[in-house]
Length: 342
Image 1 (tube, helix red, strand yellow):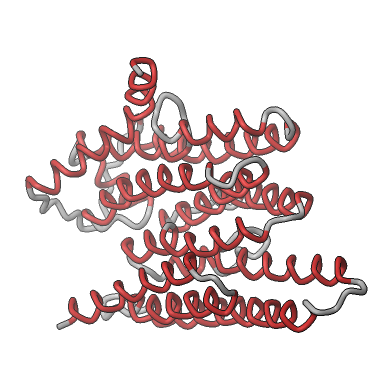
Image 2 (tube, rainbow, N blue to C red):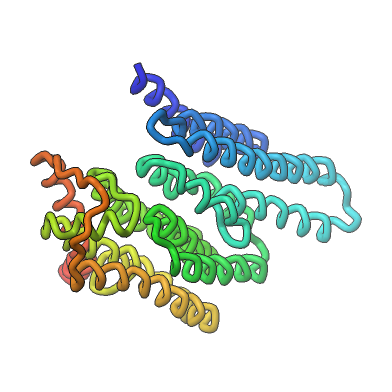
């Protein structure tokens, strides 16, 4: 019974996103966002997690605030669309309000305050949905409304800065993934400066690598660094797979995670060199705390086990994780060979 109602809400979650990105009217996009919001909240409820109720309430309040600002902005645009005088100033202010509401829904800096706190009370599957699928509709709508490059450049710089600095002192893997998502969001937003479709490729690569990493962490119920260190001494194959996927998520060549960053760098290098240098510097900080995790787990020995480690891993799950990890680790090399052949 529990899986039946979750399946229903997952279907309406997908339907809400599809309504938003395919609607011809602003009210239709708002309706799709609301369906998406009301479908995701029941998925957050879990009997095994005492923080799920707090996360669902916080998520509802933040998303309701963003939806209210979004609805207010589109209604104001509809009311003032007949006015000719002072139209440019009104539109600029209202479009920035729409952009801010969509950025709040995604969790981009400086409107990121809710994102790490809410993700800490979720399980890994809900965290994956929040970091990937829940960003599709706001990103698509943002690509329609972005007109002022100076505004989006400030958001890009803040997102890459907060995403890199915020993850330095964290011991929770969910918060590390949340701040990493904010950093990657800055890179996705930077693709709007030149092309509206590069973000989609970046998003697909980020979703694939995050799914591979979260599949491993969810299989062994690993939520904190100390749990991961304790687990690493048990299974060397999964240990190397997990560490290399972390480096791939950080964008270290020659892993697949470097490919979307490479494309964004190539497009931004002509007109936005200073912004690109700042983004690369912030990404190096993100890569630093990934390397710190990898170095600690690969080189150091952790013998004090304060957690029960679950090692019940079937053959199918093992094969799936290794296959996804192989693509994530060697994807850049495979893509390079493919493009050279054709």
